[in-house]
Length: 370
Image (cartoon, rainbow, N blue to C red; front, side, top):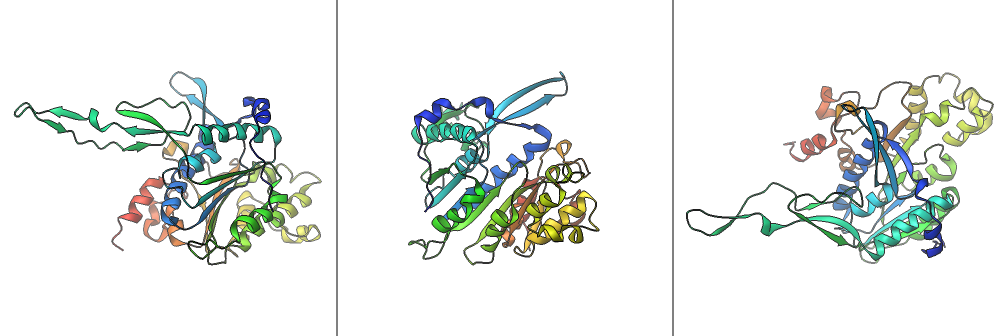
């Protein structure tokens, strides 16, 4: 049985906010935009079934987003929710029958994560709720109060703890009804335990095993045999398994000129080290390495697509050798594919290097006559 580490005041006290992961606006903002939207809609579609979100490399809970102001040529940073808190805030309104499992191996990162989870469980997460009474006016003809029609959202789910309160809204603190579990272990040593304890048990209400969504963002190498293959092996089962993977080209490219090349490729692709030279004989470019990895994932999932989701085309990741990370969605469900913004047969030439506004795809999918 998996042993999740209980929240400890000592670890909270010793946590260091300076350990927060720093990300750049252009290269990483789209990743968090995608998670915010995908978690929300995935949770709505899979509800009320038993469902589990597993973040294999949870980090600290917050990240420092570095932003450049082009007009003033100045830089500043703001602390936004990382993937663990995004999973919680974006499912907080529909969180019954939901588990969120957060795995982080680094003790300092885990201590910081614990401090945020302690805050979430004891205080709640801030949500901005629309103040209806403030949007009323008095008719000049009758003197009666009338409600002014507004197109603003009834609830806003901010991306940071200290987000400025919009006019016409009030801040409310909401607790998740889901079960939040934290593990301070290496994911290679813990993934099978998570599957056994939380995914392979029959849910009494639905009489089936839970639906699972894995987010694998290792900021480097992730072991195919010890992690990815175990997730993939569940993909063919009827319960439903989806995976979002942040695949690092940088982790491969930096080792290609070194003596560690074969051992690195063996770990990433799960191919025996003695077969690496033969398997990668004709694989030279970044595109080749990526396609081979996608090909392995397609043996388990019907749909394996690279996700590009920046709303501003200026933030579009470069399709070049300099691009370091690729966000990949693996799913067996057509609906999951549509959530990712890929409906290739209908979009056709509208795709621009595989990148388009995700909300546009969602809208097109939901309003299609076909």
